[in-house]
Length: 252
Image 1 (cartoon, one colour):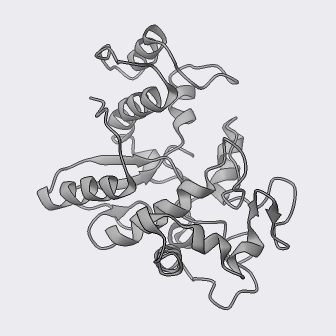
Image 2 (cartoon, one colour; image 1 turned 120 degrees about the horizontal axis):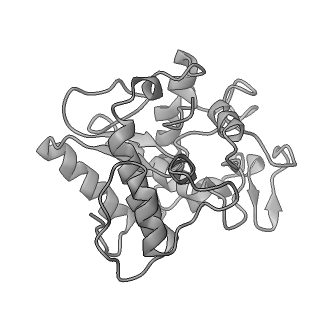
């Protein structure tokens, strides 16, 4: 079921907190990167004394430096004198942004191997970038710390909800969408893709945009993917990556 309503970041936070308070068993996919690359240089922000040691410390840093930003935004973080050196922003490419496509996490290299097209989360320019949503998502994750676990930073709980990072185009690809086309904007295509995951046809939507169809198809995929043990133990996921970079659920 699609909950069709305007959502603020605070609304999402409250919704997830309610799931935790009620003990609702749910697998929740977040279309963002919960951490920056770490393995390639041994740090999120090489040369910065405040560079955190792991994901939760990163979320805390982003939240602290953005504390004055309303609506859980992270503008102050990317404007910080040290942090901004690592990002490519509109009209401002930091001197420590490596050029080209930027730095990538290990799981993002895995995404490329699956014929997906990841963007560096240090890139904050362009319609397909995920850096901005990742930063604001880190503020939400910091507030959920200790209440809702995020795999693989946290062990899977026996009860209640658990969060995973997802790549919505992966669900479309697994459903049979050919490379180069990953967005669904009509009812017939959506039902065809849902059938690939054993889901019934959807209830008609008031409008068909890729935000709504991505959410519906990703939920259908997560329902069947949750029971696939190999997705929870990908070969490339090491304990070090699990605490620093995290992993995209479904990347093997």
